Amino acid sequence: MLTMEEALKHSSTRFAAGEIVKGRVIELRGKEALIDIGYKSEGVVPGNEFDDIKLVKIGDEVDVLIEKLEDKDGMVILSKEKAEFKQNWEKILTICNEGGRIAGKVKSVVKGGLIVHIGVEAFLPSSQIDVITPKNLTQFVGNTYDFKVVKINQERQNIVLSRRELIEAERGERRQKLLADMVPGDIRKGTVKNITDFGAFIDLNGIDGLLHITDMSWGRVGHPSEVLKVGQDLDVVVLDVNKEKERVSLGLKQKMANPWAAIETKFPVGTKVKGKVVNLVPYGAFVELEPGVEGLIHVTELSWTKRVAKPGDVLKQDQEIEAIVLGINREEQKISLGVRQLESNPWDNAEKKYPAGTRVKGKIRNLTSYGAFIELEEGLDGMIHVSDISWTRKINHPSEVFKKGDEVEAQVLEVDKANQRIAVGVKQISVDPWDKIDDLYKVGDLVTGQVTKLASFGAFVGLKHDIDGLVHISQISEDRVDKIKNVLKAGQEVNARVIKIDRGDRRIGLSIKAANYSNEQLKAEQAVLDALKPGEDLVALQHAFDAVDTDKS
Image (cartoon, rainbow, N blue to C red; front, side):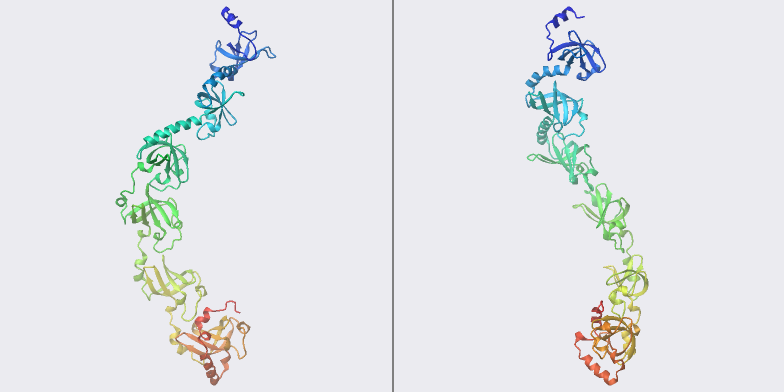
């Protein structure tokens, strides 16, 4: 029952939709509150219109707006929020002209931003929450912040806010103050704001500074993310301040002593050192000797004898190894290292162990266009040039004689320590048949052999003693021969007459058609042959071999 004072108070109250009246909480029903406004029936206010329904007590007075005097149940429909909105709207218009500043509490997340309670509900777009648009908006719900009013629509009674503009303005003020106060050498606290391939931007609470990748560590940094992560707090050294362009250069490694300052004392040339392989590149391997100090083992310094194609063939990432310091360049912060120097150089004793004339045995390890490599011992190869394979045959490729894995005997011809080469020859272990050619063949001799190669100008015939002779196309038959392949085949056995021997040029000329000639006929044919021009010389074996018609046309 109302008291006389309350009755007098409510007697002047106008009960109509849209009016704001005072009421008192008379009952709490879970998610709503029953309010007595002095009308013939009570009203209900939803619990979510209170800041916290749990803090509401029976007897509390509240201002409410009458939305409807009676619903179908005879209850009065009330709104606490709308009462506040109506009461606050004029006050907010006065305080919050566009550009004004007001405090508010974030109420909820909606599409595109947040709803903020500033006495009335206002909208805060996602892009205006912070300098960087946040991904998680729920973190702001329930928090109170200051906002700038950027737009008011009186007809629709809505307000748009910005927190970002206030933050940027505050940062601008702090930035100017920081630029004025900051000098190179200062140590400042900051937070990693962003990471790029070339460095990281550090938020110094008012201005962003660039920490370049080269100023992160005295050692190797492949990518800034190896050292820093976004959101990390750290102390940095101010290296340079450009007040006009508002740029600040920062350093992290400068907080520590430069390990290269006394590098020659720490790692004298010739010292054996230990380290870890931190990077493998085509030309060598980088080895970390201590934090901030790396040395390079060039690929040529990995072995005295092996031809290492790439460092990864003999070293692995993170492998612990020993090496010898070969050189130091403190200004360029470079240390040259070597691994092969840990072992004796087999080439130092190669001349004594393999003097010229020594006979050696070994397996063919590799074949190239110019020769074959024979393994003399682990790490030492001898090279047999194609010209040192046979005294008599013209060898175009070593595969004509050798194959990989063949066991061969050879003679050391020369040891070139400077270029790490040992020349060996196979033909040198036998007697040169041309030294006794007069005992083996004479002009007029009748010989038998097999056709080994066909050329456009004649055919090569293999004779005894591993000597080849050449039958010029004019010496095959009394009849004209247009194409060699029409009358001779490789492997065919033929009889021929020796018609010319040139010891100086190591050449033997043969004639098949003269196999049955008399001495007089031979002399006549010899005169014809002697008159040929050099380019037409039927016994020019060297040129003949070079011009072998591979298609045997």
